[in-house]
Image 1: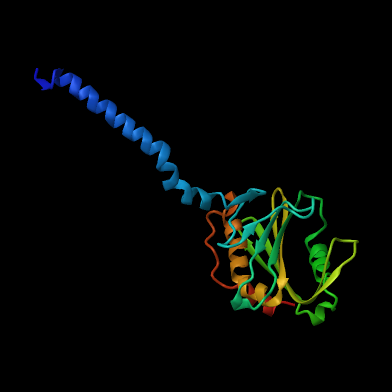
Image 2: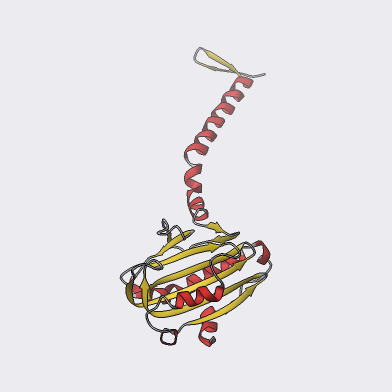
Amino acid sequence: MFAYKIGQLQFSDSMVFRMIQSFYKKITSLWLVGFFPLFCSATEEHTHRSFRIAGLTITPPEGWQRTAVSSPMRVAQLEVPFSSPDNSTEPGEVAFFFFPPGEGGSVDANIQRWFSQFQEPPSATAARTATEHHGELRVTFVAAQGTYKSGMPGGPTTPKHNYALRGAIIETPSGNLFIRFTGPRALVEHHEQSFYTLVRSSVLSADVSKSVPPTQSSPDDKLNDSD
């Protein structure tokens, strides 16, 4: 055994080893408490942006902010920021509604209700639908544009000129999830591919469709060909 002498103090090699070990533990603790949370914060923030509805994971695109719901009928709500490329002056809104089987009305009835939220008849709003199947899930896309009657059902409405709607109805075993994206037409058209990606990624996150590869075609192409 070796001995080390510093001034009037003498240390054995085992004492030195224990001192080094203690110092290492303190440094490690400081790193875990002080620096590791900072290192992980970006990843945690990204993970926390996602949320689940009816077994589907919803991941908003970058910049889309989750906000408090403006109606008890909604289960979630997003704000889509406006920017100079789309020449809009107000943000868009994505609202999520969920109804268990037998509630909320049929898919067709809700499509017609969405179309009726425009002042003009469907023939004047380029109203169209398209359907996709992903495993056991069916998704119906909806699109229209014109003068949108903004407001609560049965209450007063405010006409929003040159507005657009992009919607998706996802039929799941636990019920139907309705996703409605509305806003100035330029903004909606600018962000519609991001909306389609949000819908498709949520469908593909379900257990029943994990094995189904994402389709590469644009739902807007199918919408344009639909009756």
